[in-house]
Length: 78
Picture 1 (cartoon, helix red, strand yellow):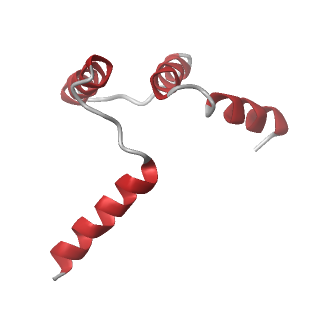
Picture 2: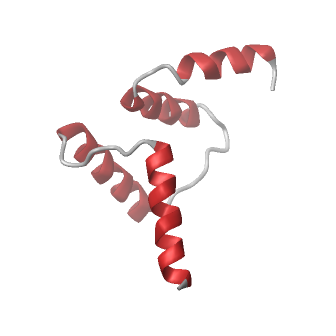
């Protein structure tokens, strides 16, 4: 990773989550070969973003989410 890219990434990670999502979407829009998503996924992403913005859903910090994922995996293994 170049120094310029690392600097941009570090700055972007300081943004609130909603602004990071908007930045990511805008960056994807600039790519010639942006990943194609099925319409159903696009609808789901829009619904989840609206739920987040309206306060209907609350984000979970990554370390907490990973703990929940690992606990769920442990339950299925037993």
